[in-house]
Length: 158
Image 1 (cartoon, rainbow, N blue to C red):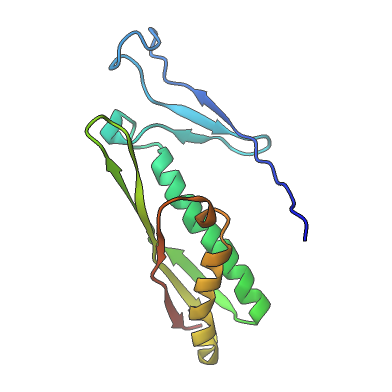
Image 2 (image 1 turned 90 degrees about the vertical axis):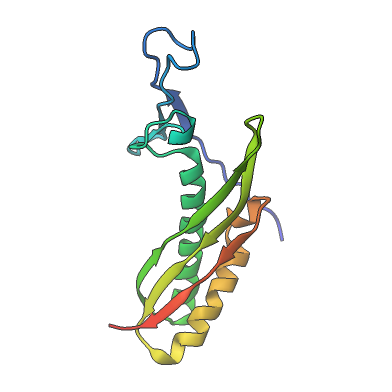
């Protein structure tokens, strides 16, 4: 089977020049916009621990969100194919990053905690099992070099 290539183009535009550029480490804002054609911009910055604006998305949050969203998209698609009706899905995902004394760092783990509501009790075990398949298929989880755990909860409801 051949390999399909998909390309993703974004622009990151620094908007944090306070007048003197990077003349001093404290003299500029870490603010930026993430842009892609035909989409609203995402206001970004660095983590507040690194002088960022807490009201803006930081790259670390976006990485965790990407893992969560990719898992959700695969999961919902797999459920639809399996005849499992999902009526609600939310995830309280959490990432852990370790920073070394020199400033370098990396993620050491991400944990996804999806809470899913399905309509039929007889699909409960399959709905739970499909989280494992979604994890195996997730493009983003397959691309990172740290463990991504999934702790799903499946509920039956209206």
